[in-house]
Length: 234
Image 1 (cartoon, rainbow, N blue to C red):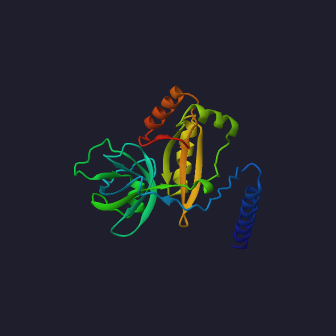
Image 2: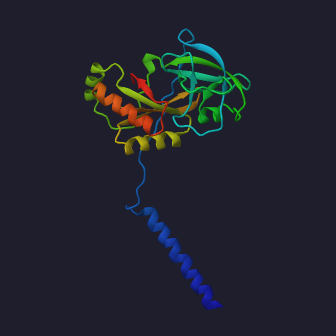
Image 3: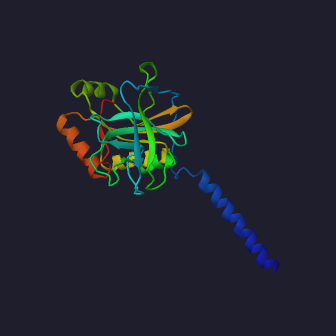
């Protein structure tokens, strides 16, 4: 019995040593990406868009973060979506609805439904108001390596050289989306910001350098499952 105890003691000691070495080993890759959020309060712009709607989530998992589709919207907008029944709100995107709902309700993404605590197949009234970042406090933290001068030249040639892939309330989901874009060889940025103390991450692909490149990039992103992606200025 003493022999077995000594053996176990040696095993624990060696195991602990291995763990310590592994923790200090330079071969273990650690992420040194620092994500700092800019404390920004978005301005509500009801003069641009202010509407109420009944939404429904069919229970299916969707890509693209927080979004809502509406039949009478011509241009995509960044919006504040509020669940009237419980007061919960999130920032997301609204775009023209192309898929018809069997109930006639407006469609909402799975991420947005969960964040607003909307149950599956439950019709819920929401208020949708356009929001804008004040020009003096626009977010500057971009998680990606960009050639600023080159991007400025590109933006002069194309009014909408970027593609918004999604807005996320969970950082992990935004990072997964960024990784998927990199797998597609698509340049991608993550803009992070806060609204009333709550963080959000906005994944933006681009910039495209020609209209043809932009079309191909958008088609590739949508083919990867991000069918709600749309063109933006930045």
